[in-house]
Image (cartoon, rainbow, N blue to C red; front, side, top):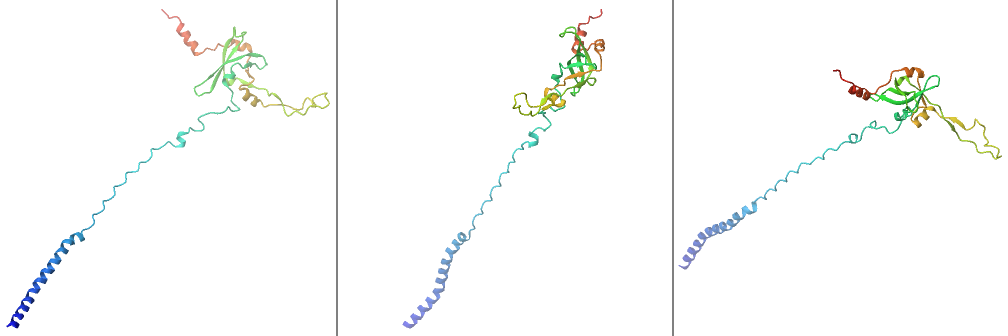
Length: 221
């Protein structure tokens, strides 16, 4: 009888064991399933970096050629073949016979800067009784004499009786073009006319004189 009860207990225990094992396996799997989402959760994507701001180009600066004026914009030196117009006023005018005719009173130029006419003050004494005569600038010829200049002179004589050089030694004449450039004007102007021809020539009138005469002219009734 006891053996039968023992067999019955063993059979019951054997039948109950699978259910218990299954329940235990289920209980152990449940936490794993709950933890799976945490383990399998993906790392949130890194946000894309913001697009860099557009690079600002520096404002254009004027080029060196634009900032600097052209080399021919300014005149920095008088040329050897140029006179000073202000110095031409007062230059004496002579005839072909080397007789003085008058002096240059004015120079007229056009809007392009070309010398057109010369006003010569003729006759009179100390500016009194003189008349103005206009001639074309090209009608005037110009003359300039070279200047005597000492070159490297020899040393003075040790005898005490002279300089130790001849009269022709150590003296030379400078180029007339150099003289004109340095003083700014020629020595003289020469006209192929006589004094009588200039005195008989028509008077020269400035535009301001003509306007004044027209304004002062009596009106006809």
